[in-house]
Image 1 (cartoon, rainbow, N blue to C red):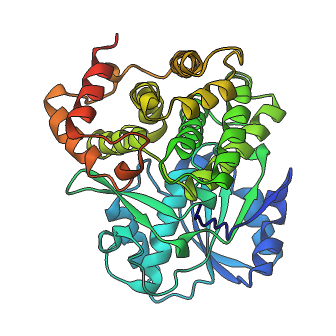
Image 2 (image 1 turned 120 degrees about the vertical axis):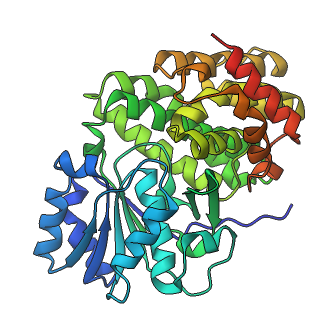
Image 3 (image 1 turned 90 degrees about the horizontal axis):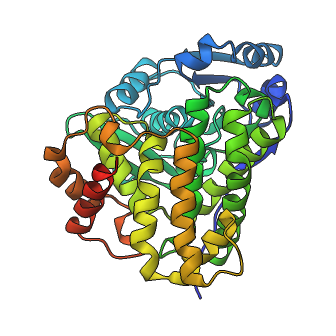
Length: 384
């Protein structure tokens, strides 16, 4: 067996770590940084303690706080233009996956120039990007420990992927206090996103023993804490476990891959601007069911990790997992596909082709055709 595993990110989890942000940045030799965040984070007052810590450590910063869900190429290019020629010792990303993916894109552009669209694909980055420090405020994407940046090409209405080891963040600071005010809908969609990462990391064709161990633990941790984190935000332990589970899932798929759930959700997100976690949650059970035949035992092991009775046969446990996944989406109020804003069956052929074109399609557990993607889209749309 041959495999590689890389995790260049230093991870520090501590309650109240936001108060020490400046000291950690100083350890990274950062004196001036670009803070990238979104208006929701800023308006919630979550930046105040972090900025106070930066000031106390003598660290100055520029700020961009208008990152949108499903980050756009035009926004990445605009941010890079605003700081072009400025000294940046680092980028501090405070937010969820959209913020962190934007930070990764801007880190490339600041040292390499051009447009973010120039770097679509794998290992296209030449000059070393600006180092990134992440403070995740959602428990979902795991982007604080991955080498991917997913950006919407606004002209093609297509989510393109940038893969490069150089954009892996240098430092991730985890503080569960920052998820205490997360709206239930965001906790639900990001939590289902994390669960999708863990499951697809385990079923991907390029999975390895280390990613397997991380993925199975993440599946168990997330499935045991998701509902409480969504419906009982006062449960600090559940929120903390979700933050850990999301990160572990990120480390798993960052060293394995994702699969056809993401291929479909990214196609839909590019066309309809659908929240990424919502799209993943919708299609996870359908793709999982489609993939079972590729490796019944691995899908059964996921079923057991999700809580299926261990006395069940592999086939029965794998099928039980499908029902568990549907139930999770129902319990956290994920909408049906036909109720997602903008969805039009006339687009399904294009969505199926865009799904097939995704960089992760070859590593799905089961080989997919355009017709397979089309069938899954139609099946999900038919569900009331």
